[in-house]
Image (cartoon, rainbow over all chains, first blue to last red; front, top):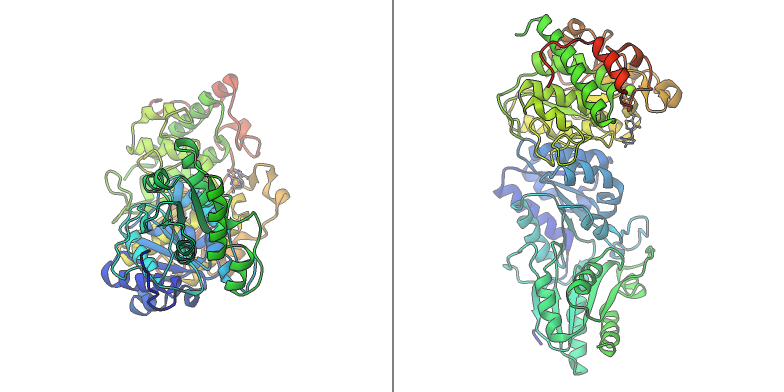
Length: 317
Length: 281
Ligand SMILES: Cc1ncc(C[n+]2csc(CCOP(=O)(O)OP(=O)(O)O)c2C)c(N)n1
Ligand SMILES: [Mg+2]
């Protein structure tokens, strides 16, 4: 199996901060907005270098989404920063009318998604955001897996016309995608070719999927591992090509199984090529306080859970 | 500069447009539209500095955002009669495949519209973003908005009102259609909002009262005053005291016509009170 090396643990939100800082230097139209979470979103560098292009909104996320929409009228490319919960559910109607329906070039950048936010607990751990965002017509939805990919995605979405939801997280995790890997919106990344089962993962579950594939290899099971960072538009071609070969699939995400990546894929497969599928995802539940590792374990969101899901799906082939 | 009589004639014609539009599809919002007719006519034909044609960015011209999107009939009529799109298109209001959706939208590419509105309470934030983009672009033109008074019950407005003053967004003139009415009744009965003037002032805004909000001369004077107060470190609010349903006697002073179309007979009476001036579409 192809080897991936952790280049040093880092948080995806720092990848966002680094990407935003680079955009500040290269694209004069990029502006940033934040609702009193500058440090959490790692926006300091951009602000330090471009104070006139930063808008501190205060704790008023609805206002932030509207102001971002307005800034596009005048040619700006606004990046909003707050936690995933306050980037989506809190402001759904503002995004729906002023950004998505109005087709504004706003980049909604959301940190602290999922249970890996940790100790703050369920009030802050949104597991519904991918579903909320992917249901909006015209919204592009991205969930990145490590520092390098988040940095590359941040830079890529500035050049993309239209509204984007970019989801990342809080904890330091393995940084394993190549530093120079181009980020192509809507294109799956083949991480390991295999023949027995397809594992499609997004976000923090991608590294777990690679560990799971190694474990499975030792058991004589050849797993194909695909990273889908763009939930919408979905790279259906990559999924179909893989399941034609393997005949079964496990999807893995730090999100409710309702509304997530797995649901999108099952919708695709049901209408094209019905395939046994298992979901590694939360099962219609809120999160709770704990360390990220404890929570990923308790809610079945790690490499062990993926291995179990593969064992189960293979029986259904 | 159009003479007062020309604006007057346009006002009457726009009223006719509003009434005929909502009558044809037996839906839409005549009350607020009629109450704001003088204001929107004056704004587009005398107050705002506009370029020819339409582009989304509106660089180098004043911008207008209609936050209370339900009064789309008056907005559409004034835009059409200003030349943004053919006046005949008013015939398609609220019909399938029309660019004139029930509430204004950019989705169908109607010239003159820069944001969707209809879900109340969002327009001020959008306008503030556009105003701040103007500042970044060193564009000295202004941003105008209109909001319902009932609409101010939405909390997002107060986020925006606080922000505008706090960040010294002084290139915006936000007007409140102060008709004292909303869907379920008088605003004072539905949810009393207290002294709006004092509220805006307490939030750090400069407030201009236009007591006769259905009088063109008073509007022109008040809006010119409001304009003169921009650029001085404070956002400017205009409290436009209007009469809902103005210009049609049986529609006035009540919330009853907020979102109800006249029947054939009522339309005939209403049109009699507003005889054709520039020609019906
Ligand atoms: C967020 C939201 N809630 C409710 C409505 C339904 N609604 C449409 S107009 C209206 C009343 C608005 O009152 P006001 O702003 O005073 O406008 P007027 O009736 O005076 O035209 C309501 C409740 C809406 N469009 N948006
Ligand atoms: Mg009202």
